[in-house]
Amino acid sequence: MNSLQGQDSLVAADHVGHEPVGVVHAIRPGMLGELAALVEEGAARFATQAGFVARHGQIQLLPGADGTVATALLGMGDEAEGADPFVFGALPDSLPAGLWRVSAPAEVAAGDIALGFCLGAYRMPAFGRENAPAAPAARLVVGAEGHGASQMAQCMNLARSLINTPPNLMGPDDLAAAAEAALLPLGAHVSVLRGARLAQDFPTVRHVGMGSERAPCVVEAHWQGSTATDDAPLLSLAGKGVCFDTGGYDLKPPAGMLRMKKDMGGAAIMLGLARLIMLRDLPVRLELWLGCVENSVSGHAMRPSDVVRTRAGLTVEIGNTDAEGRLVLCDLLHAACARQPDLLVDAATLTGAARVALGPDVPALFSNNEETGAAFVAAGMACGDPLWRLPLWPGYRKWLRSPVADLNNISSKPMAGAITAALFLENFVKTDVRWVHIDTYGWNDSARLGKPEGGESLGLRATYEGILKIFNIEDRMHH
Image (tube, rainbow, N blue to C red; front, side, top):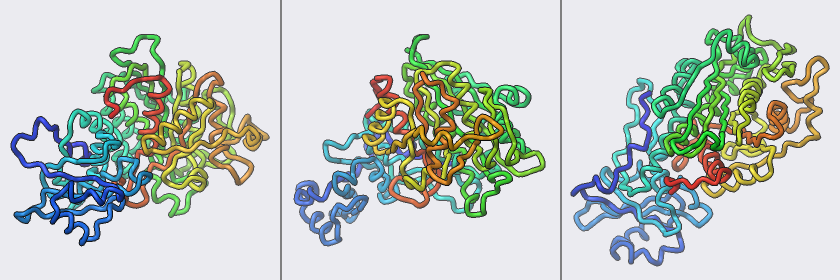
């Protein structure tokens, strides 16, 4: 994969040598009166006359006495706008070539500056395209915080690149191979279940994938931190990896199918999160479950009104072949619960209803545990990767009844689609297992600061921070 991952744009301070380093002053509108104290008076007048008002993401290059640019200003907007790292994503493409450091208000974490810079420097894989965008020539000089930021960016950009990969190059086997490439070098034990074993152990994953010539598979990975004992917390992650979703016989319209290469976004995000946990060597036991499958149309594809028996033994009537993601996840969740994890988290690009409710930038979160759900929401808000909790409303469970099976995979009502999808999944989670379900979009519809158009790792940072909170882990790379 020939993407430029962004984290290569960081340079450790002790590797700089004698090369000159420019300075970016990150300021808020309330600091404009101090501008002359930050840069020389003539440069401050230049910035004012050029219209610099410290608007969120506004860049102003300042000429030096010799006509070169060695100083720049970055507007952070007001407190609310500048509370996330993405504003620093404006820098890589706006600064001249060379080394730069950022001077920011004391409340801004150095790790957020470095992370935002990396996220803004990311480039989508080119896949042989002529005139593919080059890596930004500007690089950021960082201290100790750069290592942690580089790890985070690496894992977020891994998820981005997997989602951005064209579907002919990202089938179930390709996703499984990407998981092996990401995890095996870090000491994980990875197995890929296919064929008869898959049909026996993950029957609903197989049922979803029957219509495709590219056979489904399930990735199962295990890892233990170097300081984790055998009774350390067991964390289980599960991801929906539908590499392309036509909708099956309930075929999507062309507009609805256009971005369905991103339907493996949940698996990509959980894979990136698993790699981050391993890079940071958290003191946990980790399991990862990825359902890798393609939902296609053929004479072998699942049909509306099929009845399939899940791994848990419950039978499901297929009310709609386009509600396939919950069928992939239900077997994964049941398999994960058999190990009695201390925390189970799944992520999926599951429902359009979640986007209607919350839009593209805020994943919906569901949890069967009040404290756990609140901790994840708080963690997301604190790190600028927001999640919003929706209820597992018990009154809607009856909407999933079927006259011929234990459950239908869709609701009998045209409302609360994200909730009923989560309620479907809840049937496969043990009541004594703390569970978090994240219904994410996995995509940026348009380019914004630090967020290029295309695949996005929405929810990855929030989930990581939530895990730290739940297990009371002090992360040395946190900032």
